[in-house]
Length: 462
Ligand code: GDP
Ligand code: ZN
Picture 1 (cartoon, rainbow, N blue to C red):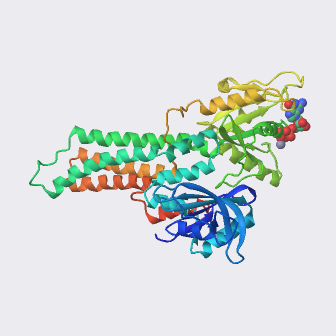
Picture 2 (picture 1 turned 90 degrees about the vertical axis):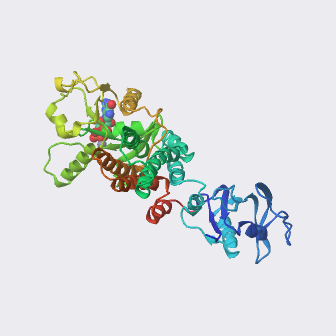
Picture 3 (picture 1 turned 90 degrees about the horizontal axis):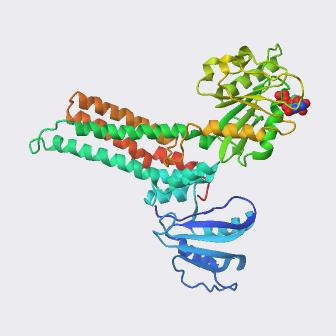
């Protein structure tokens, strides 16, 4: 890896400043050619020292004219983002000015970087491990304060050190087995003892804990799904608009999911939600409506929280409720019974049947903005009720989770092997593969495919 790469590291468009990043052995030479501390040609650039900020100008070498007034930041290897020589140029942010400077840099012998290549180099140069590289993307894409907190912690190496600790334990076990395999005459024959069993159980327990933490924390990244359901005209859209008016999430695009126009991102007290206003579910013969109703059912089935809406002077019926939230889908789903239009003096409020008494009821008026805060509080408390996110600082992603599941499977095989007093050779195979699976998480044993997959999802300049 001897070439020098360059890219615009800030978002496309105009702004206060834009940063161009150069990394590789030619970074300082290129900067010295294009940059000058005076606005006059020939250049007055002194020898560039490491970890300094220089004020000056970048030149267009063909016309010998100043392209822009800039700040230049120099970082010699290995104390830089990539652990290579890095120069960052802070220019004014405009598409043309940044592009023109980048073109000059490329004409001096740098190559345009691929997506994520700066971070990939930091990984390949062992400044960071794979979990830290992934955390960089998570920080950029964080949709809530909580998601950011965990990404930042992972970026500092919390997951890396936990995985390394587990791996280290298994490596010690493996070397014990290997001594017996390689020098059977020099050591006492291997007798699986309580100690080995405990070690495997220990690692298994931590792996399973991490898998559970992944599952708990999924919603932090993707948003807890809320479906608003109820008969036509009950006020679903009005409620949705009320909620969105105050807390519409800045990030509404959710990658990887096909979005319905009636789905929106919402952020209440730092927790991300995705809320769907479902079309009224009722009996109909109209084909278009039937399709709408099927979609609404999908929303309800996929949701974590259902707001079941009724209005005054109607009755709650188990049958109607179960049609919207089928019994088989009720498990694990949180339901809030929302009575809307309490501003109307229309007689009795509907009440839940005996069977559904455990469901909380909130009275609101979407029209007059009454009870909306109470409803939001309820949504927040039932969302985080069973979670104690403060306690865990390590949140594995889906890729980590899969590797952990493979680790668990291998370790289960080791346990069975130990219990059945299998030979060291056979035990060693499964211990070895559990070590390798853990290694894919941190990157020690990750294949090129995995690496490409991770870094190609980054933006250019990162
Ligand atoms: P949806 O079909 O369930 O989405 O219901 P909409 O939100 O479109 O509302 C249907 C009608 O009920 C509209 O005329 C709303 O203005 C009205 N509405 C919604 N919420 C309230 C409320 O809290 N009080 C009163 N009086 N009317 C409401
Ligand atoms: Zn509506």
